Image (cartoon, rainbow, N blue to C red; front, side, top):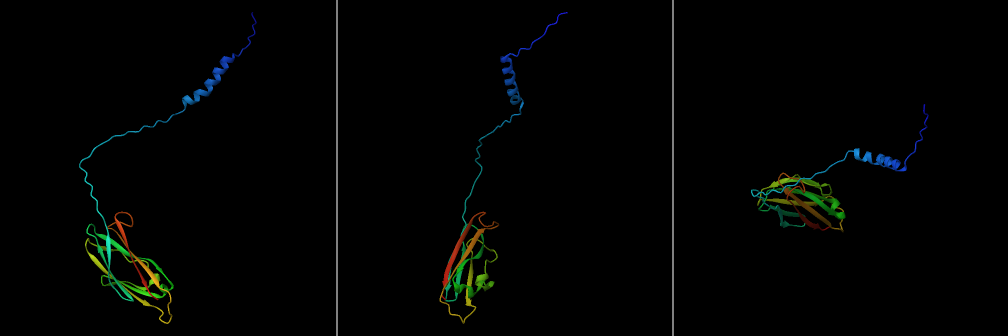
Length: 180
């Protein structure tokens, strides 16, 4: 019987190939993602787009020392929904003022100017108008006022059925000063 001893000789080149295969094979077997984008250009000649505008106009119709009348008119293009907002009231005299606000002959607010924030929404058809009356009185007549009251009322209009800044809109400011 022949007794041969086998001596393993590791070939350096074989070892290098084996390590390289171990490093590359996992990348080849890993799932890869693919992305695709499709595009198409079409022409349409049946669409008609229209543009419009929306606006309200303010006109001072009467003013006295303790009242002011303003007319709000919708422009010709769109019907509007609008509301009156107390944008600001500045001056020490403002804290002691009472206001009665009348829209179209109906009282919409009576109370202190400082607690008025806004009215309910009102609608106007295009070209229609609505009259607003503001009547002011002093709550405490025994106090002399050396300071005036500056008032800004905003009329905020929107396209019918839409909220603020959702569609056509307009804001008109009515500013005035009551002398103390």
